[in-house]
Image 1 (cartoon, rainbow, N blue to C red):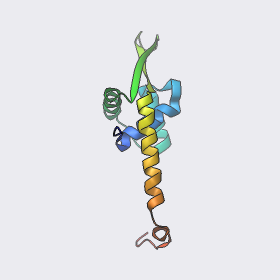
Image 2: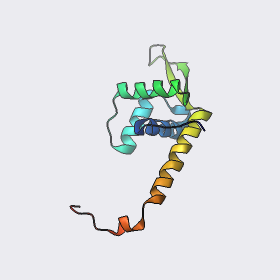
Image 3: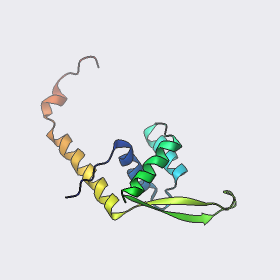
Image 4: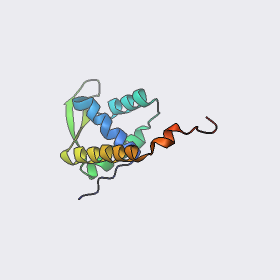
Amino acid sequence: MKDYQLGEFEEIVLLTVGILNNAAYSIAIKDEIESRLSRTVSMGALHTALKRMEDKEYLRSYAGEATEERVGRPRRYFEITALGKKAIQHAKVTREQLWAAIPDTIWQAKLAGI
């Protein structure tokens, strides 16, 4: 079985591309992550992650229509590939298995200092 390991930020970006569906371009992805997670995202980190996931074939990109607002340059849109869907599903299942493996006593114990 192919190893579908994702870093935390890659997982967040893939999930966000899925949330945005046909409107997933870099600024929209950045804004969505910042809005939902109250976390700052640098464009450099985002572009690096998007490129890395395209190289892994988890995402594919395509050019949208050129707009006057962008001086004739088209937006680059992203969509999850079949391989990307398998990777994100693998991450979900793995996390669910880890959560399920935590003994109930962990949640019943008092946490010191909190």
